[in-house]
Length: 255
Length: 255
DNA sequence: GCGTTTGCACGTTGTTGCATGTTTTATTAC
DNA sequence: GTAATAAAACATGCAACAACGTGCAAACGC
Image (tube, rainbow over all chains, first blue to last red; front, side):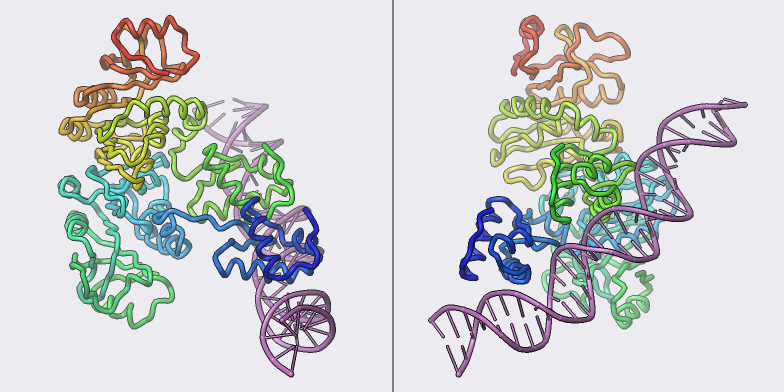
């Protein structure tokens, strides 16, 4: 590492960035030694660069910010919240039950959270979900066929609906676009609506897992109603008023 | 295993994840030695990654969350060979073709190797294969439904066969158990046989990708014949005699 | 002179290795 | 084949340490 003395702050950041692009990583302590400045100054530089999205700050240095695929990103954001909600939802599942699990990143988290060795049968339209449980002990997996929608990550067409209608499940977990207390689930796409309605009608109980952005006071624009739900899983910090509204509508609210 | 000293904590997790994606599995003790940290730190890393759903924790290390456990090992061994064969097989695919892709680790490699933006339609019974192409530009994916066999990694039952029979494809890639020049493909399981026969009959041409252990002089024990193939992809070091035998049987041999 | 940058002090947070006790797997004895 | 045992891997709590952010005053450059 070449020592670079007497450099301007801005110049130093540029140098760090070049280094970062070349090596993919920088160590704060090394930089401080190379520039003969304090660790604090380097930390300030890295903080600035990270604020501009030019690097990813880590403990002890920084890594090059790597662009992530659009679907993969949605999978990561709110990941810890989704995992927590998925854990709660998984606790609603009993022994030897048949579960409809719709496509979606939250439901993929649910599939991972499902307990093993309980004789569960998972019926899904999403290869993602199928892969999450396939091969784990005590799981039967039934894959619904059809043309896969790349945005949804699963099959939702008429062929898929027909297959779903041949099954009777204990629980179903439809992917949630929006949800309100008065009328239940909503979605944007017509085909999605048909599929979700089908799995709800083919199931004894319906569980909706709702991240905060899905809970709306009143669904309005560009959405079509799907139907009522029996269980709702929400984050622990959801307002009491919102939960009460769902309870009054006959929905069991879990957190 | 390269020793990686002076790495940043978070960087180490990234490194483990890359390793995991490449090999399908990691051993905790090896990682600890490579990074020159205690086993505890590695365990903490793996625990964090598993909590994010990025890997599946097992006793002694971790496996990639995506592939199935028994299949995952097969995926690792001969991985580079399978990638090479998959590349050759992918070159047999033309524009706007419809492909039947059976389950199996070799075919998963094929799916990854398929060229983008060629208007290809992939029909498969394996969620593995579907995930490999879903979302990539220029792919249509048709998922065949049915009960998934955890050992095979795909659906092969009568329901699946019926769906396959409704389709006409240009090429099909049946998973190979054993193959000989005289009678073509063989397999061990009766249900598998029915499925493979169905997709072969529904396709114009049949491509078999054969790793060395699949090429046998004469299939004998516990196998049922499936049928003839039109193309065979073999390793470059296959004997001329073996390749000549297939060519005499009217099979186009590629390497 | 004034804004910026820098280094330092301080309290806070993240990471690590070790000690402890528990769980899982492998091995041995029966 | 099953029970008892040994070994390895595991989780947890803890203390030491490194890195962190912040506030502030001194030093620097225009």
